[in-house]
Image 1 (tube, one colour):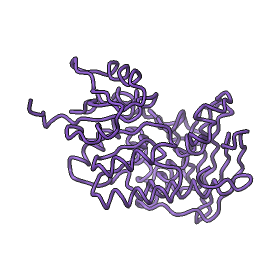
Image 2: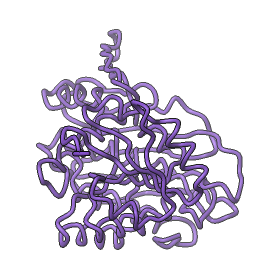
Image 3: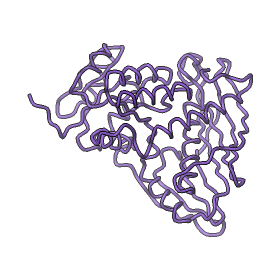
Image 4: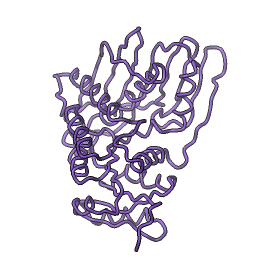
Length: 343
């Protein structure tokens, strides 16, 4: 049977929790279909495929990665394994010539990230880190406000991303073998939005920090249970944040300006509203809901880029992924005992 060229067929590598959100979002992206699943556990793969079947057609399930990557009907793969396995699956897909959308962080060191970007460029294959925040309607609106000068001159940023997670040395949050730790898992969002704000205020450019202050609390397994960071930028601008598995917070992000503050008031990485805040007036609030669950933006971006023959997304380029890895390496180097880049 001839393929429908209006359909974009996704293969999923790692049908775990975050892959469920990805599959749900496909319903909000024209043409997107779940077509294949690679799972080490066939029963788990079949359950995932059955849950997300559309039009009575469940995705094909395989326990052989090479089989999925060799399938010419698969237009791209989404990698949703633990961080520790991203690199091997991204590398295999790129070598096979299969475009890649990989969950954040792409990998856990700048060195490995650079190698994968070089491989993608050498092979002429699309590669994008799935940092969904950059594609949310709330950020499109907030970016316009920032660029139009709604907050005046940027002075500082403050944010938290914390939730309470019971200590379990084998859970991916706490397990060094699975690249556990709060910075890689959630602090990347504090850094990503810091960079995003700076880019909106500087015609797309993001200055490098001139100093970084770090206080980290390590779990018995050696991974970071919580991290407090202050990034210092030229002109006295700072970004202070805390990420951790040991506390609860509303997890807001605020950019403080000379005229007003811009705030994502709750769960900033997945914001559906943005506020302009001044001292004496009520907050000016704008709602910006998802179409499905927020992941649809990054999926649509990847599909559009791949169909256009691009090797990277203009909105989440390779340089952005590498900059985030560089900053996370620099923060980890300041952990107690000098935790190395690979943990």
